[in-house]
Image 1 (tube, rainbow, N blue to C red):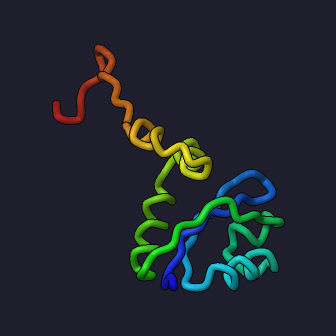
Image 2: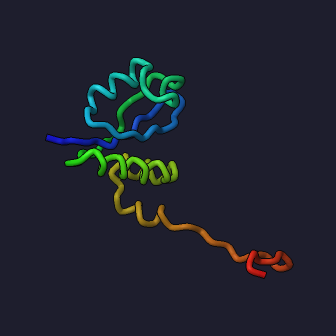
Length: 106
C-alpha cells in the first residue's frame, strides 16, 4: 500500500498542475469538483496524465517540488515515458557575455 503519490494533471487550458497526496482518488475527485488547488479550480475539467507511488508522503512531496521546477518539455517527456530525454532537458544553456557588456564580477 502506498502512503504517498505525486501526480500531474492536465487542465482544460493545456497547463499542467503537479501535486502530492496520501489519497490519490480522493484528491483527484476534489480537483474535478473544483475543490482542489486554485490553479485547477479555474481550469476545469482536469485529467490525470501521470502519477508515481511512494512509501512515504515526504518522498512524494519532495518529488512534487522537483517536478514543479521543470520545464513544460521535461514534464511532457516524463508523462510520455520518454525517460531517456530527461537528462538532456535538464541541461542549462549558458551564453557568453557579449563584447562590451561587463561581467557581474568586473
